[in-house]
Amino acid sequence: AISVRDIRIKELPSAAANKSESAPPAEPWTSLYDGRSLRGWRSPPPAAGRWRTDDWTLRAEGGGDRNMVLWLDRELGDFDLMADWAWSGTPSQETPPLLLRPVGEPDHKIELQRSENVLIKGWNRIYLRRRKGEITATINSKPGIAMRIIPAKIVLGLNSAGVETRFANLFVRSPFAAQ
Image 1 (cartoon, rainbow, N blue to C red):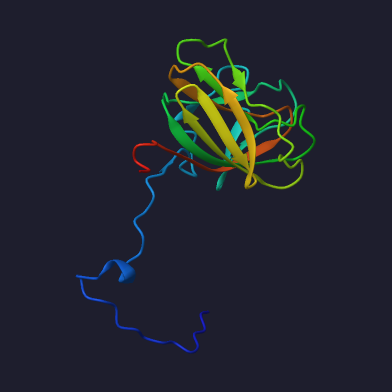
Image 2: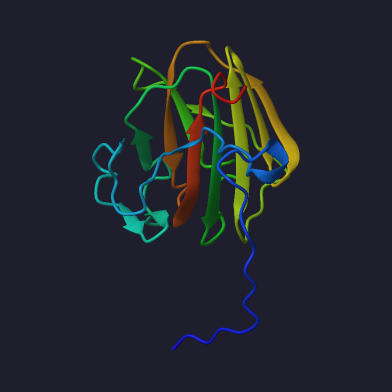
């Protein structure tokens, strides 16, 4: 049943609305998770089958190898990334559970640096920016990481950190689209 009270009707501006009467344009973010499947992601054995879609989150089972990685199926040059994650327990390391791997180097994994801004309980949000060989990150609205990496194209990985880990709001954009 639906109840409605105090409805007010407002005339909207014509098609020729000026800037102050219009909503801002949508930011050019691209979702990396469709909310239903692992399309666009892959995990090598033994991690295959340990990742699940769980409504609006991607979930990695706990236990086992702390490097149970789910890899994005596309290469990234310079980018901005937004992602949320939460652990169900204490992870093996207090680093954001994201990995970067240079294209063509499957054994070379780059872990992000440890940050005191990472929360063990509750949700974390990271804004990761990559420009050429520089990675900077804001974690939970606080500057948290600055590091140099090789300037080659990379592949993004989600890492379980040895405990059940949930990821949500995975978005990426090109820095050129943001300007």
